[in-house]
Length: 407
Image (cartoon, rainbow, N blue to C red; front, side):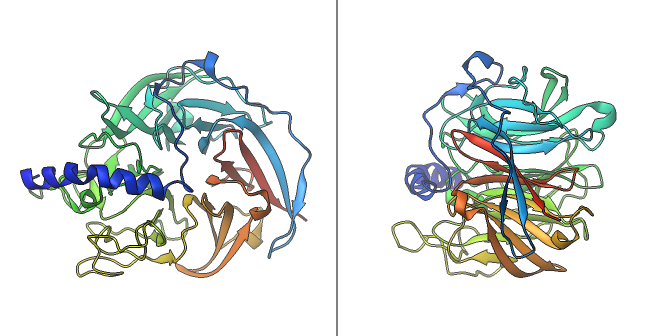
């Protein structure tokens, strides 16, 4: 990267920080915390598994039974299911727990590395490796501390035991580290060819999303050991980091593989308006910040933007003029509830709902809002091995909810 690009990035950082903290006042709370380790179990609040009885809510496709599976979690961020029906749950302050198939929640697991638990930083996504049944390996993302106040989004894998993580190895660390505390991303998605996709944010410094010399604002694709696939679109391109799959994204907190096509879908936060869904293609530029359907929180246009489109950039597959504050994404692909087939579930933080999008192939043909009466920030959504839809709520007293179609 050139000296001019580096100077521009850090010159804009204070402005970007101010705007992004305002931008995320509804999407991401700003707890006061410091570098923390999930192994400090003594400081963990008591999560609970004694829950209220199930309730019933109405939906376009019939009555839904709603059950609270766990509560008392501090800003939980993700749920990742294991092949045996258990699930891993991350809490943003830096804790990871096991949830048994019968609803028992473990103490915080040991061995989780230290995280920068400030602003939007902390412990993020968690997923079982494709070969978990034999390797007992999991992958997780987090805000990795660097020198001084620097931090980056990092991804590690580890071997899971009944009480903690062993053999933790970092396979990817966003470059360069920055001192901002927002727009870290980050979701993890495995494809069927031995790769893992990592979604990132621009860290609040807008121009970096157009800079292939930094990882900010990218979809990253690496092999399961962190090495770079030979067919990545920028492998061998001078001045470009080879881990890129696509770029020009703002803050991607949802990603899933379409089970019918095998294509990666992602979504990202817009600024004020312009949350969007993309189907990222290799080497393509998705526009941020030169093309956006959103504006600054002051009401002014994004300074770098030329409008809602720009030459050489891709249009979003779908966008919301008013931002729901999207986080978490899951295609429904289980035979248990046929009425939910051809549905894409998306969490909403700012608008406090679970969004169900109806699909006809890749086309989005309808939208339904669920759980609005609860007024809970939905951080993650997954389809469990039992065919139920599981929702993680981002609250100081966060919950894991289970949704099942009645009848």
